[in-house]
Figure 1 (cartoon, rainbow, N blue to C red):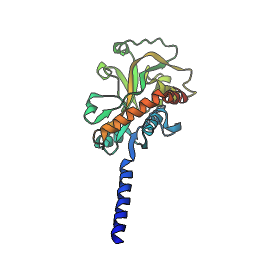
Figure 2 (tube, rainbow, N blue to C red):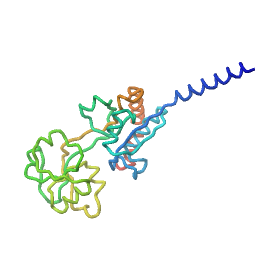
Figure 3 (cartoon, helix red, strand yellow):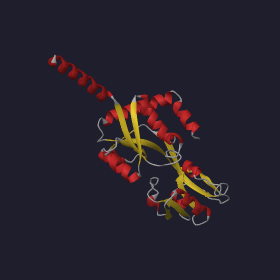
Figure 4 (spheres, rainbow, N blue to C red):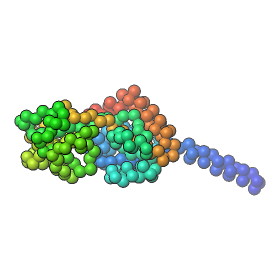
Length: 242
């Protein structure tokens, strides 16, 4: 009887172990970046919703943790998180991360005051102007090397208000992000300058130190394709105003 009980318990334990082993789970760090991602946005914003639903299509239990960018990047690099989103592709990041298929892009460019005649075709066209930038943000390729006159601020809303109050001539930001912060004070006073100086795809970065990193990447890309092919991705973007 004792022998039979031991065999039964062993089989039960083995079955439970296999069940837990078969569970798919991923833990990702994400960074506040409205209107794409944000704790106060419905479903975390369109990009957070796309990332979560892409994994859920494959059967994953998804855990998302909102953390500052510096910590998110560092901890994902170390494998504390399985990955981080969103990020632009940078060659030097390939030593630590695998990059997913592309997520909705950022249009990077400038806002100006309405009525002012400013045309931008190259970085040389920017040399006469005082340009507002946000501390810690990445710049489009070639921007840092152009020796432009920059005013550094801490937030995007501060940057746009500096533009309104004529302390700068142009505010560098993402088009949708600037629109998100368009308060009544700013509405009707500033406008986007076409064309954007750069369009950059956003990506989920999977840590190379994550367990099963290549599977995590392949499964995400598979779920993302399913989301796109079914039309759900377009519906998510439309629902969030993109």
